[in-house]
Image (tube, rainbow, N blue to C red; front, side):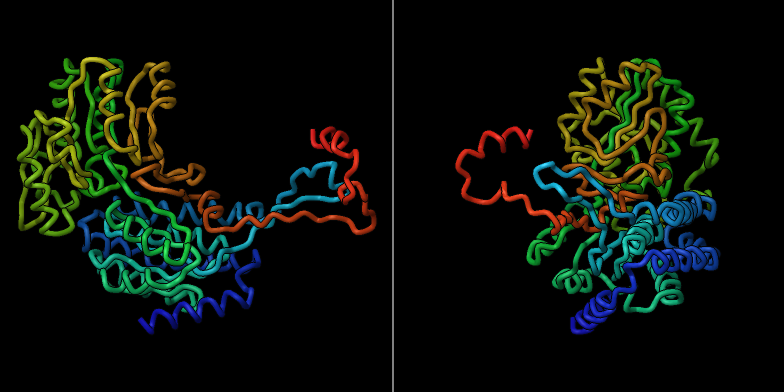
Length: 456
């Protein structure tokens, strides 16, 4: 505990020296991080494969490549993000001007998860550095190889008073959360998110909570079935379904269930062959406990496709389940694995009703050629972010804010939104001292009528 207090104290002292407030300093840190990611690419991809069984292509596609794009975007736009913003001022206060000044918050705590241990650690750090903050980074202990490379990489380019990595598990998390940071950025489950928010409340520390939930995927009868099946199978198979925005359940017209299952089966075979479990490019489940949990969830329905697993390899092939209800265990928790319950529906109203009965999801995916339905879905379905006719890839655009709503999270980041999240907007009215109109001062007498006209 004393060690973490000292880390925080050193970072506060460094922040108060003012180095991080300058554009040149921030751009330098982003460049150092960019260079370090390039230099450590082989070690990072190897660590992701060791921790999660991710093929180098998937590790780059879903983690390292996204970070490099985020860095390029931040460096290109940071100068404009940092500029003070001039806003209009009421004539009542003339002569004056009003401006919004951007300033860093101070010291940010980043608590990251195991499922995308590189991307979900470094992306918040990019936002923190771009916004001029110091950061304490706490990777997940469930991805130890990646966490070790991250620690070595960050230590090679940043002094600990700017960026410091803390390793460990629950004890270390609790010790860090007992301290007063200027912002806490947490990615993980809603259960732990509540713990983080309670701890933050003790110090009135603002939080960004990036969580998950049951993200629905809805097909209508106009959807291109082959394309939909490929993109859904891909989105569900990434990281063996251990993705916060993975399709969590599928709503399909009752008459199309069989045809979809056939197209899904074809897509999976095309990706991983007849035996995905033994395909080295197919990722594995993170722990034995999660493997057992997912195996238990499979017992809640009838396997429409897949269902095979290997406890030694900790792999379960992409699996479609049918015969489940909203009361089934597989529909009462976020799956976080390669299982996809298929719920047939008779009408779009029924499908929307099912979505409305569950908590607001982190993502929503609609496959349709019906533009009117797409507009209606965007208008009526609450969700953090999503895609029309695709899955997951909305995360790859740094111009799109990423975040949840309700149970799936609060706050957002990526691109400018990450900069804004970790920046304080300081409102300033600059009033000239050369002219002091006495109208606002007492005595007020008959000034009310004129005040009303001015304030219009």
